[in-house]
Length: 288
Image (cartoon, rainbow, N blue to C red; front, side, top):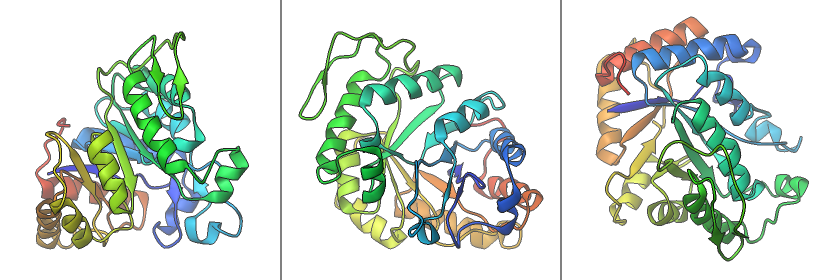
């Protein structure tokens, strides 16, 4: 079973982060990234929000580090672990803006980018950025097709329903021949979008049983990734067998990668839990 790290500190949703994260910064994040790299975790995550309305922050949280700047730094202090936006909101950006900025990240990280994207649901943030909200689903679909046509190409061209461009040079571009595109979301529609337009699905806010039910009704392409997070944080140090059983249940539900959420009370405890979970999953140091 491959594991990823839902990176602490970078995103703080009420009720889903530990107290020690409030005073933590880049020093702690670097230690976590280096540990994940050494232990063979598949990827780290960083989400995107530009601005959270104050009356929504109590529910969604107000801390969201920018993934581009954060991953650019972490790329320099790691060697193997991949860097996954979880998620980048498609409607906030032109596809060529994403291709240029994240293509550059792919270059500086040595081809470790995973572009996790979503449609977005926070109307106030769309309005803040002057981005269309009502047709965001159709616009996101077109953006996904545009990204597949444009990433890794110095002279991309695309003619779609919402985006239309040709005759521009985008250099540097991504170095991976096919940058993985994953779709995040909490609806059956997000799974259909992922299965038809992307390379993976990373649901959130959906029960494991619901995920398994939805997956059973969809024909997935070869190599398609399904990234599932446990509904309850794992405690591998104190309950190794229960942790192994939980990983097995997630695999049975269709997970190809488990987004690790562990019980932790300090940075040192989090690092201990990462190592214990890696042992539980049978990861080998240096493997990705």
